[in-house]
Image (cartoon, rainbow, N blue to C red):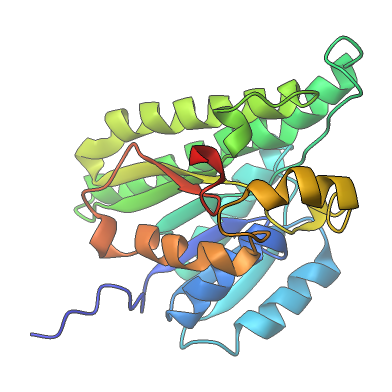
Length: 261
Protein backbone atom coordinates (compact mmCIF):
# COMPACT_ATOMS: atom_id res chain seq x y z
CA UNK A 1 0.00 0.00 0.00
CA UNK A 2 1.31 3.43 -0.95
CA UNK A 3 1.24 6.02 1.84
CA UNK A 4 0.42 9.44 0.44
CA UNK A 5 -0.96 11.52 3.34
CA UNK A 6 0.30 14.81 1.96
CA UNK A 7 -1.54 14.62 -1.33
CA UNK A 8 -4.43 17.02 -0.65
CA UNK A 9 -6.41 16.25 -3.81
CA UNK A 10 -10.12 17.09 -3.36
CA UNK A 11 -9.50 18.84 -0.04
CA UNK A 12 -10.36 22.53 0.30
CA UNK A 13 -8.09 24.82 2.30
CA UNK A 14 -9.00 28.38 3.24
CA UNK A 15 -6.23 30.84 4.10
CA UNK A 16 -7.03 34.32 5.37
CA UNK A 17 -4.37 36.86 4.48
CA UNK A 18 -3.27 34.29 1.93
CA UNK A 19 -2.09 36.74 -0.72
CA UNK A 20 1.22 37.64 0.95
CA UNK A 21 3.66 36.79 3.73
CA UNK A 22 3.18 33.71 5.87
CA UNK A 23 -0.31 33.19 4.49
CA UNK A 24 1.00 33.01 0.95
CA UNK A 25 3.79 30.66 2.03
CA UNK A 26 1.17 28.27 3.40
CA UNK A 27 -1.16 28.69 0.42
CA UNK A 28 1.73 27.98 -1.94
CA UNK A 29 2.49 24.62 -0.32
CA UNK A 30 -1.18 23.70 -0.07
CA UNK A 31 -1.72 24.44 -3.77
CA UNK A 32 1.42 22.52 -4.73
CA UNK A 33 0.02 19.56 -2.76
CA UNK A 34 -3.06 19.61 -5.02
CA UNK A 35 -5.52 21.19 -2.60
CA UNK A 36 -8.25 23.50 -3.75
CA UNK A 37 -7.29 26.81 -2.15
CA UNK A 38 -9.46 29.74 -1.11
CA UNK A 39 -7.56 32.97 -0.49
CA UNK A 40 -9.07 35.79 1.54
CA UNK A 41 -7.38 39.16 1.35
CA UNK A 42 -8.31 42.83 1.40
CA UNK A 43 -6.49 43.92 -1.77
CA UNK A 44 -7.95 42.79 -5.08
CA UNK A 45 -4.70 43.24 -7.00
CA UNK A 46 -2.76 41.10 -4.53
CA UNK A 47 -5.52 38.50 -4.56
CA UNK A 48 -5.40 38.26 -8.35
CA UNK A 49 -1.61 37.95 -8.36
CA UNK A 50 -1.77 35.19 -5.77
CA UNK A 51 -4.43 33.28 -7.71
CA UNK A 52 -2.40 33.54 -10.93
CA UNK A 53 0.71 32.12 -9.25
CA UNK A 54 -0.96 29.48 -7.11
CA UNK A 55 -3.07 28.15 -9.98
CA UNK A 56 0.09 26.96 -11.74
CA UNK A 57 1.32 24.79 -8.88
CA UNK A 58 -1.03 21.80 -8.52
CA UNK A 59 -4.16 20.14 -9.78
CA UNK A 60 -6.58 21.98 -7.48
CA UNK A 61 -8.57 25.11 -8.15
CA UNK A 62 -7.65 28.46 -6.60
CA UNK A 63 -10.10 31.27 -5.94
CA UNK A 64 -9.88 34.52 -3.98
CA UNK A 65 -12.33 36.79 -2.20
CA UNK A 66 -11.93 40.35 -1.02
CA UNK A 67 -12.52 40.10 2.72
CA UNK A 68 -11.96 42.40 5.67
CA UNK A 69 -11.87 39.99 8.61
CA UNK A 70 -12.41 42.85 11.06
CA UNK A 71 -15.97 43.10 9.70
CA UNK A 72 -18.28 40.32 10.88
CA UNK A 73 -20.64 40.55 7.91
CA UNK A 74 -17.73 40.36 5.48
CA UNK A 75 -16.52 37.15 7.13
CA UNK A 76 -19.94 35.52 7.27
CA UNK A 77 -20.64 36.35 3.62
CA UNK A 78 -17.20 35.18 2.49
CA UNK A 79 -17.51 31.83 4.25
CA UNK A 80 -20.83 31.22 2.51
CA UNK A 81 -19.35 32.26 -0.84
CA UNK A 82 -16.37 29.96 -0.28
CA UNK A 83 -18.44 26.92 0.66
CA UNK A 84 -20.85 27.61 -2.19
CA UNK A 85 -17.96 27.76 -4.66
CA UNK A 86 -16.06 24.71 -3.47
CA UNK A 87 -18.83 22.73 -1.81
CA UNK A 88 -16.92 22.49 1.47
CA UNK A 89 -13.98 23.71 3.55
CA UNK A 90 -11.73 21.05 5.08
CA UNK A 91 -9.08 23.25 6.67
CA UNK A 92 -9.20 26.87 7.73
CA UNK A 93 -6.06 28.90 8.43
CA UNK A 94 -6.88 32.07 10.38
CA UNK A 95 -3.74 33.91 9.42
CA UNK A 96 -4.76 37.50 8.65
CA UNK A 97 -3.17 39.83 11.16
CA UNK A 98 -1.72 43.23 11.97
CA UNK A 99 0.92 44.38 14.41
CA UNK A 100 0.62 47.80 16.04
CA UNK A 101 2.80 48.79 18.98
CA UNK A 102 3.75 51.94 20.87
CA UNK A 103 6.81 53.70 22.25
CA UNK A 104 5.91 52.23 25.66
CA UNK A 105 3.05 50.43 27.36
CA UNK A 106 2.22 53.60 29.30
CA UNK A 107 1.87 55.51 26.03
CA UNK A 108 -0.20 52.87 24.26
CA UNK A 109 -3.59 54.31 23.38
CA UNK A 110 -6.96 52.65 23.07
CA UNK A 111 -6.96 53.01 19.28
CA UNK A 112 -3.81 50.87 19.05
CA UNK A 113 -5.40 48.27 21.31
CA UNK A 114 -8.58 48.20 19.25
CA UNK A 115 -6.79 47.98 15.88
CA UNK A 116 -4.94 44.87 17.02
CA UNK A 117 -8.04 43.31 18.54
CA UNK A 118 -10.32 43.96 15.57
CA UNK A 119 -8.21 41.97 13.11
CA UNK A 120 -6.15 39.54 15.18
CA UNK A 121 -8.77 38.40 17.65
CA UNK A 122 -12.22 39.49 16.44
CA UNK A 123 -11.34 38.51 12.87
CA UNK A 124 -9.97 35.13 13.92
CA UNK A 125 -13.02 34.52 16.12
CA UNK A 126 -15.51 35.18 13.32
CA UNK A 127 -13.47 33.17 10.81
CA UNK A 128 -13.08 30.14 13.06
CA UNK A 129 -16.68 30.33 14.28
CA UNK A 130 -18.05 30.24 10.73
CA UNK A 131 -15.71 27.36 9.85
CA UNK A 132 -16.92 25.42 12.89
CA UNK A 133 -20.55 26.01 11.88
CA UNK A 134 -19.87 24.61 8.42
CA UNK A 135 -17.84 21.59 9.50
CA UNK A 136 -20.22 20.74 12.35
CA UNK A 137 -23.14 20.76 9.94
CA UNK A 138 -21.25 18.45 7.60
CA UNK A 139 -20.47 16.13 10.50
CA UNK A 140 -24.11 15.93 11.52
CA UNK A 141 -24.87 14.89 7.94
CA UNK A 142 -22.36 12.05 8.11
CA UNK A 143 -19.25 13.85 6.78
CA UNK A 144 -17.09 14.69 9.83
CA UNK A 145 -13.59 16.11 10.02
CA UNK A 146 -11.75 19.36 9.62
CA UNK A 147 -8.65 21.25 10.65
CA UNK A 148 -8.63 24.73 12.19
CA UNK A 149 -5.36 26.61 12.48
CA UNK A 150 -4.62 30.00 13.97
CA UNK A 151 -1.38 31.85 13.27
CA UNK A 152 -0.32 33.30 16.60
CA UNK A 153 3.19 34.50 17.50
CA UNK A 154 6.07 33.99 19.90
CA UNK A 155 4.83 37.24 21.41
CA UNK A 156 2.04 35.17 22.96
CA UNK A 157 4.45 33.25 25.18
CA UNK A 158 7.33 35.70 25.62
CA UNK A 159 7.54 39.23 26.98
CA UNK A 160 6.80 41.53 24.05
CA UNK A 161 7.77 44.98 25.27
CA UNK A 162 5.86 47.83 23.63
CA UNK A 163 3.68 45.27 21.87
CA UNK A 164 1.37 44.15 24.65
CA UNK A 165 -1.78 44.70 22.61
CA UNK A 166 -0.50 42.52 19.78
CA UNK A 167 0.72 39.88 22.24
CA UNK A 168 -2.64 39.81 24.00
CA UNK A 169 -4.43 39.01 20.75
CA UNK A 170 -2.07 36.13 20.02
CA UNK A 171 -2.30 34.70 23.51
CA UNK A 172 -6.06 34.93 23.27
CA UNK A 173 -6.01 33.14 19.92
CA UNK A 174 -4.13 30.19 21.42
CA UNK A 175 -6.65 29.92 24.26
CA UNK A 176 -9.53 30.14 21.79
CA UNK A 177 -8.12 27.29 19.71
CA UNK A 178 -7.58 25.06 22.73
CA UNK A 179 -11.22 25.56 23.72
CA UNK A 180 -12.34 24.79 20.17
CA UNK A 181 -10.17 21.65 20.13
CA UNK A 182 -11.88 20.27 23.22
CA UNK A 183 -15.44 21.23 22.29
CA UNK A 184 -15.46 20.15 18.66
CA UNK A 185 -13.37 16.98 18.73
CA UNK A 186 -16.56 14.92 18.66
CA UNK A 187 -17.12 16.21 15.12
CA UNK A 188 -13.66 15.19 13.96
CA UNK A 189 -12.38 18.75 14.19
CA UNK A 190 -8.88 19.46 15.41
CA UNK A 191 -7.57 22.92 16.24
CA UNK A 192 -3.96 24.02 16.54
CA UNK A 193 -1.86 27.19 16.64
CA UNK A 194 1.31 28.12 14.78
CA UNK A 195 3.71 30.49 16.53
CA UNK A 196 6.11 32.20 14.10
CA UNK A 197 9.34 33.75 15.31
CA UNK A 198 11.18 36.47 13.41
CA UNK A 199 9.92 36.13 9.84
CA UNK A 200 10.81 38.37 6.91
CA UNK A 201 7.41 39.75 5.90
CA UNK A 202 5.82 43.16 5.42
CA UNK A 203 5.14 43.32 9.15
CA UNK A 204 8.85 43.14 10.02
CA UNK A 205 10.11 45.18 7.07
CA UNK A 206 11.29 48.03 9.30
CA UNK A 207 13.64 45.76 11.23
CA UNK A 208 15.06 43.85 8.27
CA UNK A 209 18.60 44.95 7.48
CA UNK A 210 18.71 47.24 10.50
CA UNK A 211 22.22 46.81 11.88
CA UNK A 212 21.37 46.93 15.58
CA UNK A 213 18.39 44.59 15.21
CA UNK A 214 20.33 42.12 13.09
CA UNK A 215 23.16 42.09 15.64
CA UNK A 216 21.11 41.92 18.83
CA UNK A 217 18.19 39.75 17.69
CA UNK A 218 18.74 37.80 14.48
CA UNK A 219 22.26 36.80 15.55
CA UNK A 220 20.60 35.01 18.49
CA UNK A 221 18.48 32.83 16.22
CA UNK A 222 20.23 29.43 16.21
CA UNK A 223 19.37 29.01 12.53
CA UNK A 224 21.28 32.29 11.94
CA UNK A 225 18.74 33.76 9.57
CA UNK A 226 15.33 35.35 9.26
CA UNK A 227 12.48 32.93 8.73
CA UNK A 228 10.73 33.03 5.36
CA UNK A 229 7.09 32.50 4.39
CA UNK A 230 7.99 29.23 2.68
CA UNK A 231 9.15 27.87 6.05
CA UNK A 232 5.45 27.48 6.94
CA UNK A 233 4.51 25.34 3.97
CA UNK A 234 5.34 22.00 5.56
CA UNK A 235 3.41 22.52 8.77
CA UNK A 236 0.43 23.86 6.79
CA UNK A 237 0.29 20.77 4.59
CA UNK A 238 0.65 18.50 7.62
CA UNK A 239 -2.19 20.21 9.46
CA UNK A 240 -4.42 20.14 6.36
CA UNK A 241 -3.72 16.46 5.77
CA UNK A 242 -5.15 13.31 7.30
CA UNK A 243 -1.75 12.69 8.88
CA UNK A 244 -2.72 15.16 11.61
CA UNK A 245 -6.17 13.69 12.26
CA UNK A 246 -5.30 12.89 15.92
CA UNK A 247 -3.18 15.98 16.57
CA UNK A 248 -5.13 18.73 18.29
CA UNK A 249 -4.81 21.49 20.87
CA UNK A 250 -1.12 21.97 20.17
CA UNK A 251 1.18 24.93 19.47
CA UNK A 252 3.73 24.66 16.67
CA UNK A 253 6.68 26.97 17.22
CA UNK A 254 8.41 27.86 13.94
CA UNK A 255 11.28 30.16 14.89
CA UNK A 256 14.62 28.60 13.95
CA UNK A 257 15.18 27.73 17.60
CA UNK A 258 14.97 31.31 18.92
CA UNK A 259 12.61 30.59 21.83
CA UNK A 260 14.82 27.91 23.36
CA UNK A 261 18.17 29.67 23.02
